[in-house]
Image (tube, rainbow, N blue to C red; front, side, top):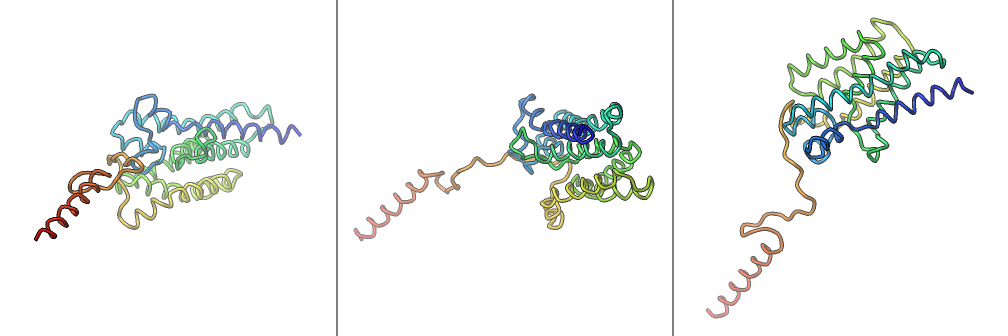
Length: 242
């Protein structure tokens, strides 16, 4: 029974660590707006960068990557005494990634998982992680689209693993991770095709408050509507006098 219990407990720990949404945590700590309230609404480093605060974006990127990297590294270093091997490390990494996508601490509304996935891959295979990150950097540099770079890197990661290092228990975890990451970028794919996707570093205005009234030439809200009715009544009275 312990053979099944330890991998499950490790995966649960990975999921809980992954559920820490550092985009929200860092933004709140630094007195910034909630990243879910502007831009793409995605709690991730790229959207935090749209706030104009580069330090907050860097910290978000770093901590999101670490929450994928450290749980996997812990299993690889100390897991052997509990019967946890490469397969368990891949499972824990996938669990941390799922935690970022559906964080239990933030009503299961998370980010797209690019930084966390990068941390997981770097821990599983540093050379694979380096190749995947290099792919992201090249695409991002030439296109200026973070989403496109993430999609291309996600597609290539499992193939790098199979072509260079051969089939292993991590390949299935990488495939699932990559497919989920691409799926989470569905809206970005549509924007890329329509030519409306935001580029790296592009600032975004905050979302308009819910229930805001439409603008009127003479003002806003109910006062504007009342003003227009007032004009209508005056015009009607003038018509009768004539």
